Length: 124
Length: 124
Image 1: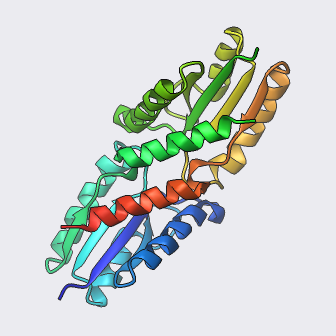
Image 2: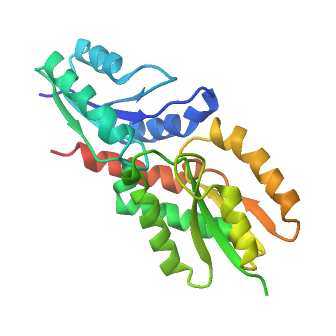
């Protein structure tokens, strides 16, 4: 039996209020996936980093980890910084199946829901 | 009769591929709102900036502009950098009604759609 984890990977910011939507997303997913560890990791300014979190999850016996980049755009951080980090983690933790999803902004349903929010925002 | 515009305001990045989801969002909204000018503006690294775009829209007679911050987290840029920029634009363009929505990551439907994408991403 595998022990699954889901990592929501965000940019991070100096202002702690920045993390609020990530924490709400984590709560929604913990409710929906009671058998899965759902954790946050950040590229900079906030902790834990992705390597710190994967090390911790490995210590808890997780062997199937999905990383979802909670970024709108790929390019920049997602295409440049994340792949070498993931390569290093796969070398360091060969027993873990580590999968990386496309950034959430690549998903058509996400974009269509954002579009609906924009339309609502225009109303007086 | 008012001339409406919708501005999708993003962070911007050095890598041009980063803008792809913003451009897809713009296309979706242009289809849904054929009477509205739907434009992109960026905080840094990409152009136009928000002041440049508002000046251009004002020159085209737009008098009702909604700015939607396409950011997950408020805090940082959205709470610190955007409000003084908007104050300056209201002073510079008193004839324009300039509305600023909450960041898209504050919207519950957006978070729930991202959650659904995360769940799908975990499947083998």
